[in-house]
Image 1: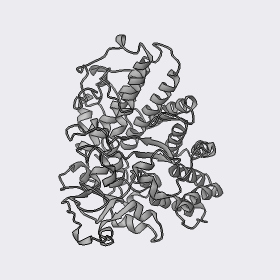
Image 2: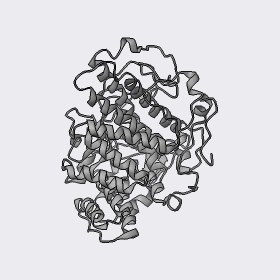
Image 3: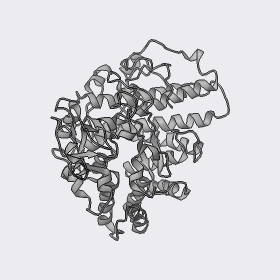
Image 4: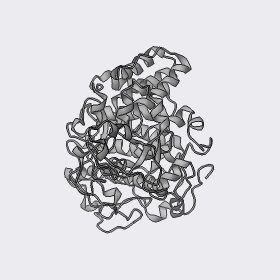
Length: 490
């Protein structure tokens, strides 16, 4: 998964030249490998699959935006112009000119372009193991399209082909329902093709495919289908909650029984501020770190994505997840034997006194310089607790309170919280609250608020009918010939 891959051929729409990080829109980039000289041996497909996986490592933006756009976190940072797009999203003042949203658009389409190139030549040769490669590729395409549809709604749907510059200007946005249908088709193919367990670290399998399919169905309101899909993951029996919740967030304990779909990162390759898409480390951890911190256990960082008082107060004082999720820095320092010698700085981008304690720089987990960019901490896209809570939600929506309570109470029992006994709409509200307690800091909160209809009440300045989606980047509209209508309200 860590192998660099020289560019094959690109979708002109927001694709990435793999040998040159800034050339997203090159139609004829340098270092092109044409199809006639490629996909002639199994290793070519393997290398192309590695390239398709590589775009997963831009996930730090979704980790941030899913929290900062919600009531869970503020943007933070050195100043309000430090990664200004995040501050705009926090304040709900973002518009079609936003670097972070453009990166989401470009990077996910770059991943799609790499999968589509493979799929265009999927029948060029036959070999043992090709179905598994194509199954993983189609999972990745589904994931990238799901990210795009979550953010932007209707998006251009391109399948199994490369596009030239002229074709891009004639491309329309496809209805989200059509995109979701393709996502589901890709995930059904992947789940039918892949084994339950993939022995290669970082590669997806049947469980990941079914879990993502269940999530996609849930986001569309297909509750009965989602319940069946997610139950199949649970009934497989290959996953289990890690006994100690705190152990989940340490590099040494990754790839455990709770892992359904992780994005793998490495601290063994240096990073550069000049090419965030090139990073092999998880930039979220370094940027979430404590500014100019000098003390035990943690390491200095950039004070981004700072949890709010509202999030901290949402936890019962007896819930151990509070302190695992949210670092109360002053309380931590006060508890140290050398408290007076510990120091840190406050950034001008906002300060809450709290830090994301799940994805944060720790002294024992530093990567190579610049270690702000090279954290080895994997991003847990879907873990088994999330599967249980999604299944609980699906069953509650279907009126099956008994199954819903079984699943949500399994999550609560892990952290010694009392069992719920509610039903109906109260139970559904309890499940969404439990999702906040269990999953905060992981980039899911904004989407949960939108799905549950709570966004207007919980997010300051959120406008119903507008902020459920983000605006399409204006530069992408322009590059496509100005043919795409903008999302409502922008």
